Length: 230
Image (cartoon, rainbow, N blue to C red; front, side):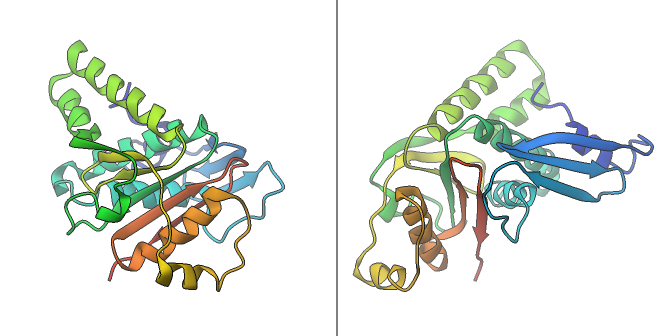
């Protein structure tokens, strides 16, 4: 059920009185996480990919925070928990992806990300989630599950998926090319990997301009999330 607390959320709730315990879960593709009831975490990568400085679980958390940053404070905890759970679920089933969040003050899809499938009206995942919370009806559940299915299909497509800070999908199958100045910055880095890795490096360059967050998941499970506010 989308509005139900996950096992990890239940263990982290100080009022749950769940006692001592350890949760073993698949936190991402090819990655297993141990969580103790006192909040300690340990991850095991099941590939030969070199571990990054940030844990897989923390990368998902950072993306979910940015994708819910503009939600009303009274609704933010539930929205954050749901967004993180949904993002983890859809990413477990994909062959790799890039997800980006524009700076909240921009308010619309930046022009440099118009090479893709854009929506005249954003697909509002969190509005559907809050509607289900309020009403709990079969119709609101069906509406939310339909939007989740759309989101899953977008993530599984090639290109970049763009979310805003209200938990809305602005575009998917977005492809980017560096301008002359950006290409100069990229040439200073020894970029390993294919087109997705190069696109991620370009998106990191744009963090200082139009983006607040860019999330990367490779086909072999390597996960990174970069956030910048200034």
